[in-house]
Length: 78
Ligand SMILES: [Zn+2]
Image (cartoon, rainbow, N blue to C red; front, side):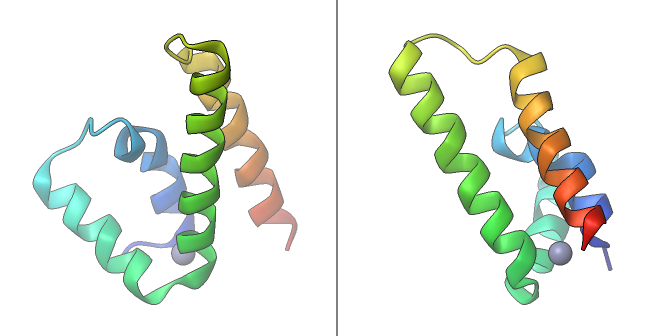
């Protein structure tokens, strides 16, 4: 079973559809029972969507990376 940290490590790929079916299935299994990560994924996806709509360009990897880093820090601080 994946930990929350494992999920976060793969989150940007998950949101970019840049992963194998097997990994995706593992992440979704984790999300199904972990409401913390479910909320994180949902809010990250919404944030990225808002950013890309407002600026109408592809989000540079370093920007989504920065958002993910902030989420990771928040999770570790709990
Ligand atoms: Zn989790």
